[in-house]
Length: 102
Image (tube, rainbow, N blue to C red; front, side, top):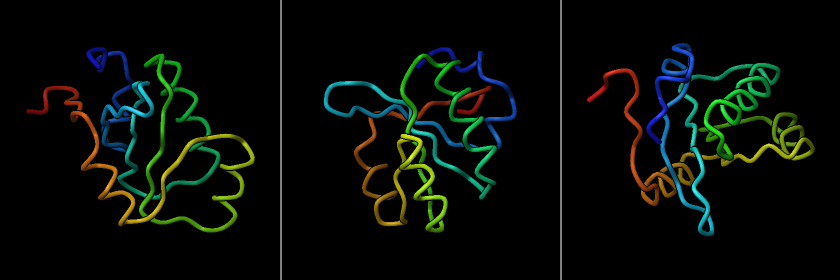
């Protein structure tokens, strides 16, 4: 993923970005750094897919049942749980460095 400069600067503080491969298709993995409300998650998920032209999978450390059910009903891909997060990050292809991070 080389077009990190096309993302709004706000996303650097909200997410940690990785590229992952799911059944031969590259996806953007957005690991949420802090909790946020569901309306913002919907908005940011749509914008990330638009800006990157890739499917985006959201990673959560924890979530409530309402959020889980809503994300499932709306078809937003996500992974939840500390153990699932650690296992998934071990499988990720490479970290995306944004805005001068080295």
